[in-house]
Length: 193
Image 1 (cartoon, rainbow, N blue to C red):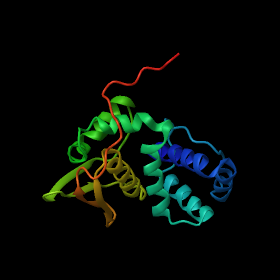
Image 2 (cartoon, rainbow, N blue to C red):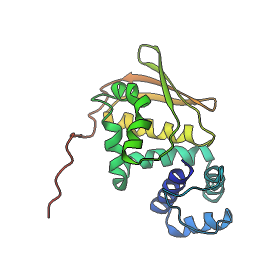
Image 3 (cartoon, one colour):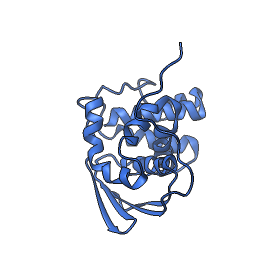
Image 4 (cartoon, rainbow, N blue to C red):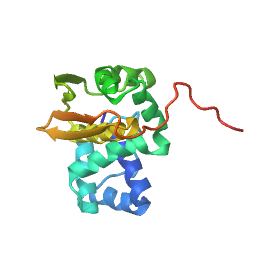
């Protein structure tokens, strides 16, 4: 999990702020390399440490860095596969929320050996949900907040999404069809040669 977050953080910073900023973060974090490979293992806690250094370099909070990265993972054209994987959760945002518990298993089908934290969903009242996601990596909850926010927009739903404590996210769906969502087809569009 650290490797995937580190690689995503690297991509987010480089695409958003540029390579020189990423290199400054690597120097600040005293990293031996300035690139991360998603299939390698890294020291536990390294993702949190690099995110803290990114926050200092960018003058933002660590929570903001992680949330923005979560949004980036869904909305960046280079991560269309992540969006597609998540959209298989159903035709509406509420259906998607109900599919969250299956997401780690679906992700492991795409990348065997991927260790994602388990997610559980509880509907506490009509259109009020509690998403629980426990992880040793502090930033995972905030990454998930960013991803949920991006997916609500993708579906066209108006929601309040807030982190509660370290492992829980409150989601209130205010309007299921607030805007027209982004187009999604089960089949991948054909590439034109």
